[in-house]
Image (tube, rainbow, N blue to C red; front, side):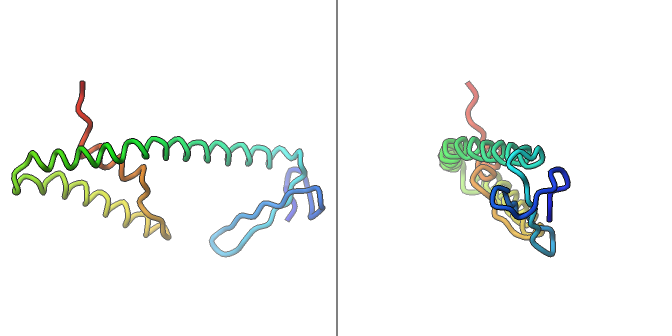
Amino acid sequence: MPCPTCQAGPERTNTLVLSSDEISMIETWHTPDCVDHLEWEEQMQAGAEEVRREQEWADVAFPAACARLQEALRGLSVEQRATPFVAALAEVVELQAVKQAGHGGFVVLPEWARILDRHFPPARP
């Protein structure tokens, strides 16, 4: 399918972008200078950068949150231990159910880190 903006077709110098709807794959051709395609590339790069930053944050935040969870558990009686842990686990399970209802996906590390931060927050200075 040609791009509605540049009207490109399947030529050697043009770019093919594959996308999908709920039923099929969609092929859209673009010229090298197509405004729509350049905008799409910028959005993809911005999205990739956001994912990289979030993963970088999670790589530090998750181990720290896990350590706080372990420390919090050591300081509680057996009866008290369950409350924050069960609340965090329930939130993870709920998020996973929402992702599955949306046709798959898993709770990723940044999401785990945010949940643990909420239930086992860092000490404030």
